[in-house]
Image (tube, rainbow, N blue to C red; front, top):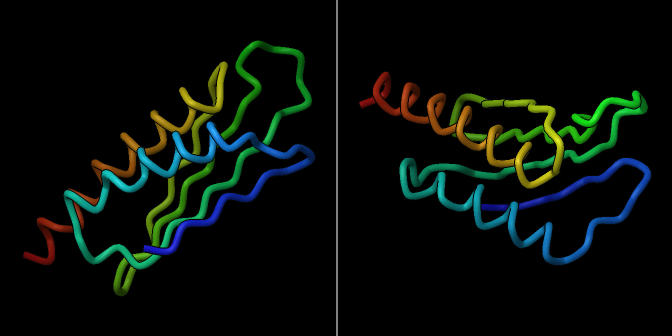
Length: 97
């Protein structure tokens, strides 16, 4: 699976990128035909505590799955987005099986 992290107006540290990569890679255990994943990380300009946004998009044969979550930290947002994608992947897998 190809893995790409895009950030808006900041550069992530290696620890954050590795954390997200490991989370997304676990989706391959459920469905091994994932072609690529693309992650967008950005900080919302509002003053609330939950201003970290993670958008995760994965490409699978014939389809594209997407999840967007807003939380207090990028790790928490990525966890939530991957959980949402896990449900989508399982649903897609059951339809194609």
